[in-house]
Image (tube, rainbow, N blue to C red; front, side):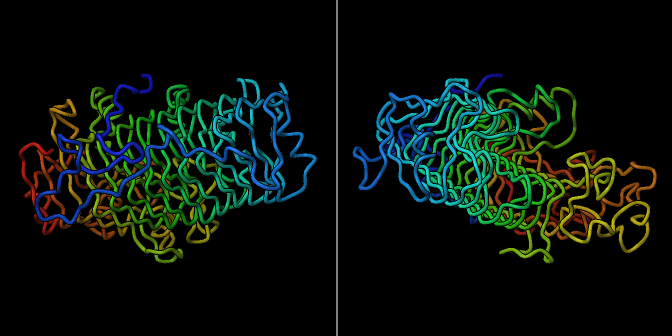
Length: 507
């Protein structure tokens, strides 16, 4: 299915801003009802409609780059020293026609685009900006039509540290539009229509620390539909995060991506995901997988997961595919972060395919063959070497060699569902905490319902003080246990204390 340009529906507000929240008929945020403390997110920028123009004249001391000279930008970068500012004149700038031709900045370089400045890869060059230099700045530039290979990126190809990318369009490239390094700041950019990711926050060695993703429009990415080409690859999203320790993701408009909007996958920690508008993504708005310690708050999340949720339902799949999906992720006090739990609060979720699912795969643990996400154990705690088979089968190691969905609190949110809007009759109305029946491998200590009991009753996963509007159902322990609200609140589950449910359609 193609990018859903037809579904770009936004409120009628000031041109530079998109007001988030439950939208009323006049394009103004509707007030949440009931007792929940959920609030609409703050305004986020509609960057792709027109990012701020760069300087019309070259700043004092800047090196001017001529679009009529092929390769001028790369050549002048090579001949200039560190901390040089380059001003790209209006027009289309090109690299020499070799696929490896690219700009390799020096430490502290800045690249400023004049109004109308474009760096065009012409479907020939793989990378726009690469190399290991730190503290590079790119502003007011359009970077387009580069053909990075799968899992590689166009801007900051080598994940150098300390880059600042602002007011820039990175669009219509293959691979990832942008990679990330330590202390990278990505602000007020348009990441649009890239073949795999808008941004791939991945570093080949070590972890990324101190990442800021703020005020960007991240739209229509994964145009090459990699999950179809490589089923189950987990290699797409508007933004994908790998082993990021400390990230602030705020004020972004993440919409109409093919697949997941934001996906944190494998050993991420200390995330704050707040004040974002996540809407009309084909898959989940947010996945937090095999990761730790996060605050997810004050986001508006609407009309997500319609394509992928419906696809699974039509196949007869009973798993509660959700719009916010936590998979083997939880709070972990032994890992330093700004919180020691995962807290999901004061969000507004409206007319998505299902709500929040907390999941833990009983067969996925350190050094298990079922852990297909990596070729080795990637647990942050404890020492992974102590979790090798067969020692794992004895206490106390068996209790601590897992990515646990634990210490998750879901509270003060507003969940509204109108099935006539979503276009569904069943399986789109689920809130869930569950695991599978452990069976694999034959030496696993997690056979049977041990993990289902743990995630449901023992790992401090709690819903409370939420407002539900619409015909919600609840799944606990395993996919077969579908509960009404009273059962969900009653013994033995005792969830959603202080919450209310109005079964009339939400909106």
